[in-house]
Image (cartoon, rainbow, N blue to C red; front, side, top):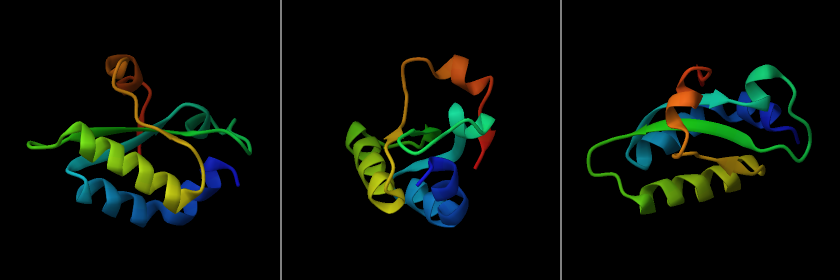
Length: 90
């Protein structure tokens, strides 16, 4: 399944998981945003961490999202400002 298809069918569940793991404002970027994703692509998501969130929360979120969507999920931290310029809300 393409990540864009998984996103489209599981949008509500994604938002619920993001909130459960002390994060907010999920945004998509990369190939899914531009409609160039394919089978085997990952889903690039950017989230805002809430007070008290830890790396365990982000790791748990990534694992749960991958289980839910059956596609690889990337939650980048290193190039956040660059990603913010192109990201769109889920």
